[in-house]
Image (cartoon, rainbow, N blue to C red; front, top):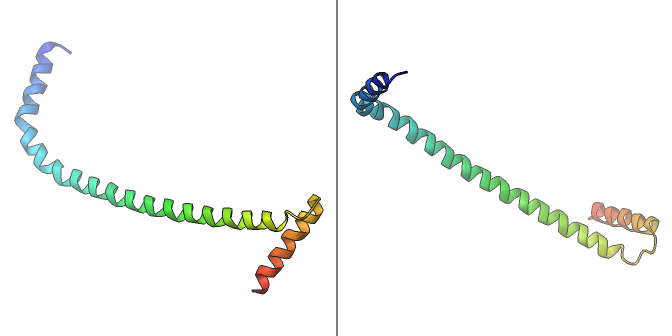
Length: 90
């Protein structure tokens, strides 16, 4: 493409830019609003996942404390099963 074609397309852009801007602006506003709402939902989901992981970690630490008296892996497993049975009875 030669210099003349670049000048031609630049001229078209200058002429049609205001009309294009008027038609594109509402679509861009809608798109930005959508991404803001999407970001909020992702943050909520992240908070829920974080809370779930914290709960699982706390439960695992409690089970580890319960099984600290065990001296072998078999005894630790038995302590874990006993803790699960106690939770089911509650």
